[in-house]
Length: 160
Image 1 (cartoon, rainbow, N blue to C red):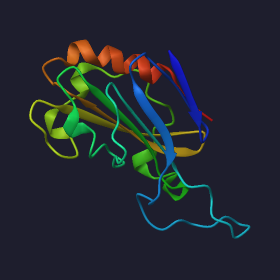
Image 2 (cartoon, rainbow, N blue to C red; image 1 turned 30 degrees about the horizontal axis):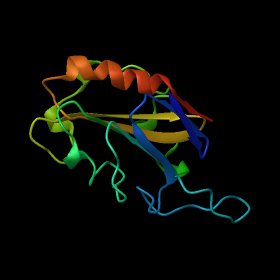
Image 3 (spheres, rainbow, N blue to C red; image 1 turned 30 degrees about the vertical axis):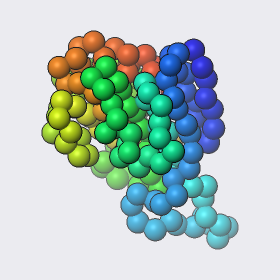
């Protein structure tokens, strides 16, 4: 098991996974607000993790990586949104997802539909930080076997 930590996020990964924690270059919603001191808050974090090597360029929700997934592969993106999203109904859930069910996944839930794949999105807030968890399974048919692997990774994510 390998541990990766940056930007107030820690993730424990099974052997063979590739991951990175970076900052989002472009805010997902609206312009960046300034704090009471007139300074901009730190840029939102972005976590990508996959069962195969991640390409150098990966979009926030996996473009460039999900196209490479084989049937046994998994991709996970944890996208932090701007703090001005706090309190919005989309981010009303105040707990980090640790367990997903095979029934949470659907081929129509993908950002871009790819044959055989399925995905899910969960919006939540932890430590006053709004996030979207986006997970893609390389195979919808294998979801009963691969979702427990995803859950193992989710259990190893900590957000400060």
